[in-house]
Image (cartoon, rainbow, N blue to C red; front, side, top):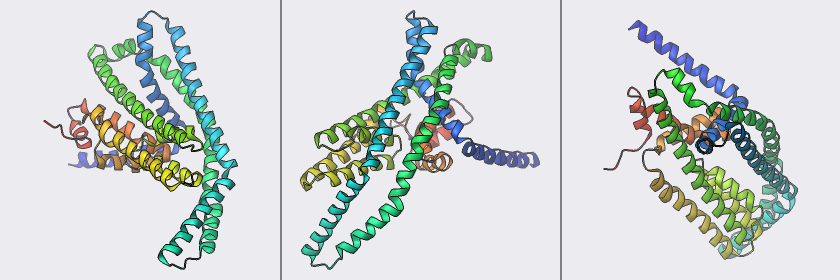
Length: 344
């Protein structure tokens, strides 16, 4: 009885210490987690090319340079787009205030109201310029600066992980002493790989369709909104809402036709609904899906620990945890609690 009490106390303090370290070491751990997920995605392709006869000393540098160059290029495009948005903030803000003023005038005429549109617009202007908008722009500027510093850590981790995974079979056999541990690792790795690629491809479709709709309706910064939708789709439930609000807001600022704004908004909302609630569950199945309660807990926990990047990574991390728990007889009940019952 006393031993169990002491063990529980030690476990509690160990968990608190782990949470504290996760938060404290976020600048180091976040690039490591991202590098690990990308390395898991790329590992099967590296193994395939090596089995085809290409030497490892050639395959690893080529894959490393290509993936890092693509990621850095995407980062530069996003950074330049954010800079363009900042440069045009006065124009965008004036257009937004004009639309609000028009809506208030329409409300006064239609419902015989007596709203002081000039006063309301000036208050909104003060709130945006002196409050939320200035904070948002400063956060974006600091985020751009932290991207380049974190990218160096990420690149270092990624290259080291790829190099280490090239000889994973020999190392796991050495650690386990038998082939059983290798089989277990390959099963887990295959499950994680399949989930990550399915999720990336589904989100990529959502991002490309968002980009296409923005191009059709002439919405500015279409590439940025497409990438933004791709990224936000990793956050369940609220991510798709955030991913549609900002392009729709840009359409309100830019477009003068209410019909065009309405159709554009409906296209985005319906597209995200179909992908998130119909296509993704069909492709994923129940095994790799996480129930709503677990998703909410993961969003709150990882959001508190690592902020917005933690929210983006919450579901992939939860799925990986679920896959690992499934392979343990002692903890498999927790994997079942995280998921959905099989329909049979």
